[in-house]
Amino acid sequence: MTVCACLAAAAACGYALRVSDAGDAGPIHTPERINPNTAPVGSLVRLPGIGPTRARAIAAYRETIRQTVGDGPVFRSCDDLQQIKGIGPKTAEDVRDWLEFQSAVPEAETAPRADSPARPTL
Image (cartoon, rainbow, N blue to C red; front, side):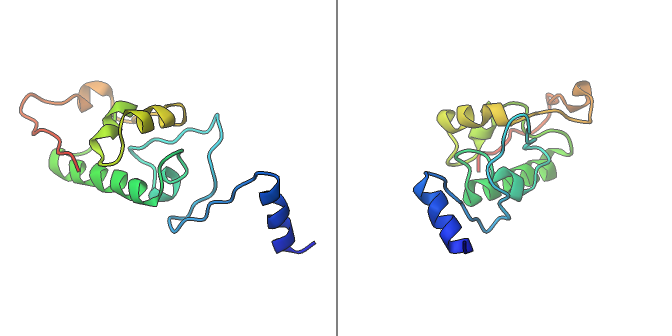
């Protein structure tokens, strides 16, 4: 059977193949988790509801914040992803089970300081 025939048969059975310009490796499966503080765009794009545009926006926001306030986790919970344009409460909830927010930096060292600038919304 040719590759085209295999793909057609898979599509007929309800399987979908998403091809992305961000190096998509396919949808993620539990127990695999993605840390939005460290994941490359190619991993972020695998999250449900996060396509290449949102994945790039997450990475750009993360880098902008790090340049402004320094190293440490930018995202501490799914709700923090709502700072990204196009990600609202529903999308944040949809990706909750696929994310982890662990950091190598102890929490006391990453807690926001009183003199820290506010984080911009991109």
